[in-house]
Image (cartoon, rainbow, N blue to C red):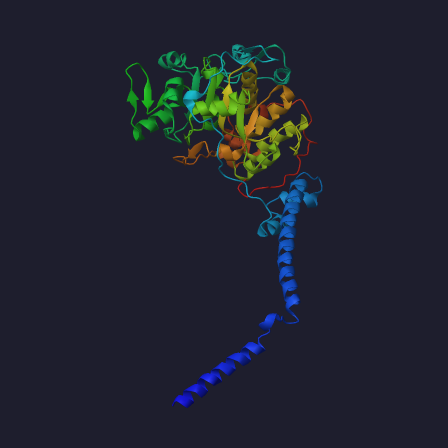
Length: 493
């Protein structure tokens, strides 16, 4: 047994020795292909790095080309910006199209208690004193049964209103005896309001939404005013608890309800433009105001908003840029597709602007965009800011109630004299929580496809107290006006 065990051990030792002798790495010897393997491995790593760098450069070049092509007048290249185009679809599939943020952080100050409020008022260089037309001459001549809220501005008066002087007198709604009257108790209350957060509800489309994240300082500083008509007040009474303060004031949470009696327009949307655009007329003692649409719940402290959007950059008017559209002709096309107003009347509105020289928006121009998101407006009520609001409202009164179509035109007519801050859309979406309307708005005029539908028996669909500029003979030849082509950049319109 001992002899057999020794032979087995000896055999295993010999086998182990043979394997060691056969090993290419024994006694420091390396295989002949070893250097090639090292070179191959290093080369592969370098190849991966080079491919990665080239891929990153390709993405960067594609993005730069995309930005350049959006500014190009060549139709093939500009198609890259059109989300419906095949070029855009291919690039989007490859992940080469940057996605815009829906919401982004707002660079707000940290503490509303430490915000320093500027002393005095901002002085305007061009307009020092602003006065308003208060009488409707045609009503005084008894050529109509009641005065119009907008005052029946003539084409020559409209043209004159865009020529700046140190002292100006313009139409700005609130013609005497034309409606939109406040109760004496509300007039008395708003006289003390220097800082205003305002909203509006008309025709019962919404209920008041309570703002959040409001500091104690802002609650003491700001008046929160909810402007509404009698239909909305009745609807709110049926659905929300209203508190009566015993002094004529009605409240829903932080909101003071301000009733506008005798709405001057047939169209509720047009009535809603009165507090939205003419806050300086409705609340003349206000120095600063923030407007938010009635369907919104404000979630940012208003004092921090004034600091961010006005005082930090020394602005007097701030509004967000539209998420999808930059040109008013784009916005008009979207309004027609979504049946926001009569299509032929929108076309007529745009033809007048085109005839008067309004260009299509181009990147690198004087404005970030010609189309705003009008649901949030932040203002200091200076003469120039008030003049812009008056002229903007006059366009809404004369033409369609779609105020986004008129904003860029008034900016264009005032040229560089009106300065404003157009902030990013992603910040705009971070200011509020959006709630759905209690019901959808619809009127017969929105479905009109041609002007013949508004004649004869269909004339009852026409507004009787607004948009009259669309039915007043225009002192220019519009037949030859061709609207610019529109690249539809968003399926959402």
